[in-house]
Image (cartoon, rainbow, N blue to C red; front, side, top):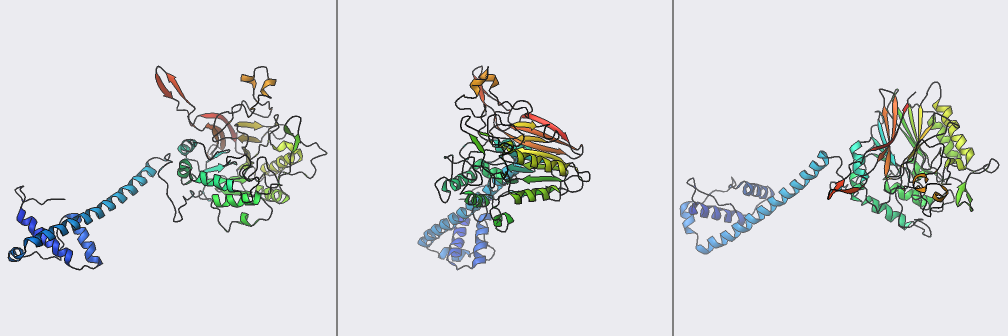
Length: 493
């Protein structure tokens, strides 16, 4: 409580008594809303309201001691009320100010500075203006919702224009999130857990994101067209991504989530095509002896498909739109020869040839030449690929995974590694289409477009600090998050 002092610095008790008595009458007097606001404001500035007239000296002397005591109590009550109100205003103001300051001072802050909508959900960052060119696209796949996600901090430092969630955004504790469940409860819980992850909450309101489903998002490991839960999984994903209720993908009958986007104009158009390679895909041929998928023979793949007829028709249509750079996402790998029998396009050779044929036809068109780049995930490794036998100008970047890349490419029993002379060094899938070694640490992919130099730079970037190490009785910490692990530059036609 502030005590008023006289000009000589000593407490003037007579002035203070006068102030208490005046405040006593102010408490007893009925106030309308405007008066109440004025009184709070005057208490805040420690001065009397202008509409209260001080008592005369005679009137002050007529007040009895008991009246003074009551006045004092009421004064204390009024003052405390004003102080509490002022404190609440200050606390709210400081909270809002500090939150705004954190958000503007560091783009990498991801934990405590989230903004919620009226419904309590944190909004997604809006996509860039489609009329303007974009120059940086990030992408990745395979993200366990119950694991730490330091990669968001790394990614935020790069300020990508768009980030692609390239499949397996959630896993659940079960390999088959919907198996035996009519409503895919585990899958919904996984999305809820991801949505409540502090790092993800901070990133989703800063990074414009797009996504596509892979097998774990669709509820069953290695699933294909016969997946009975795929439509439930689609609806859950629509809700997770806050896809508008009038989006045409919500009204497709027996079709996947494929879609496309274009940014820019003139000779600076980037097209992004997201293929759905799960919803309508045929079952792969499985070799029980090899415990692996094996390609269909030339006389076996008739009627087998990666994409539905409707998606193929749509794909050919979007390839005819003007573009200078075309990024085509397939959640499953395309150009790899798949020595270890994982899921990839060459398991249905006819479909792979069709894909490459369409890309050649429209990307090498004389009137509208463009640079195609394939993006993929799923494998829990990172790598660059090119198959000259198919088309020497077509390159692929696999980025997998955000949170749990597997150094040896998934060989838990050492069966495949045991066939190599030096397993510690040579336990790498042999693939003539891969450019160099693969990446066996957590990472993400980046596509940088230099519109002035007419080049595209493809990189795989370390997602997080690798480890701490002990030197001279001190823990040292690597600062290699954001390190470029693989890179390749291509020319735009």
